Image 1 (cartoon, rainbow over the protein chains, first blue to last red):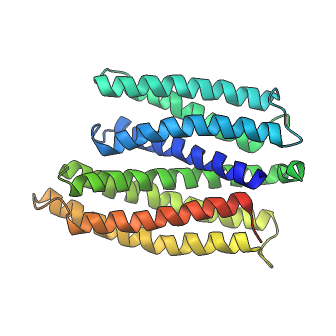
Image 2 (tube, rainbow over the protein chains, first blue to last red; image 1 turned 180 degrees about the horizontal axis):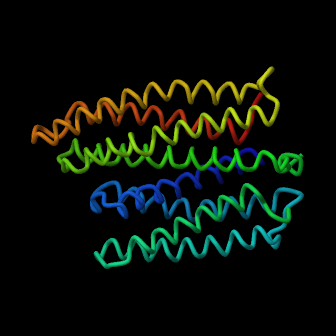
Length: 124
Length: 153
């Protein structure tokens, strides 16, 4: 059970990474339209829900973790930041509004912060 | 059991972080390559072909190098050098084989980008070849992610 939860948590985290890489390419000047961005947006939806659901499931399943542990609460806050900025970046890109790159880099920093918390697990 | 599975020495954290980050950039770049070139062969722009080529050259291959180097670092930290378990062998086999796929895909994507720059047909067969090669690599990486998570031995 633990193995499958971790696998699905990781797999959905990779979906988030697909979005981060694609939007980084756009922020650096790659063509903004087309299939790549559509796939990235779908991955963001799947990855966003999946990382949260399987992450909380893992926290409940593993004996040494609790959902109210500091590093897990920090991860949930970063997840909310990433979700908010990710949604904003998507809207800005679709409308051609300025500031998409900045919003995206904030989202990417939040995703990197999530990875740091998942690996180091401060306080666990 | 689930508690034991979640514990690891602090010394492993930095190589593990870099290993996962490189794997994420690699998979993200390969999906970007596949979606760009799949779009290009269905009548997309030359810019999409160039994006696919650059994603392989600038993101995927450097990420593979970091992934492989940090894998060695982790194996060394975990003292798995002598008798490596099955999941480590699976990781090596998948990563080493996938490098050949990545090199072949980069060469094909480079040729497709060159043709696109000259205003010829947008890649066509070359773009399809890249999508197939990258697709095989991505399937292998999903197996690798499962092996790293489940650690069957």
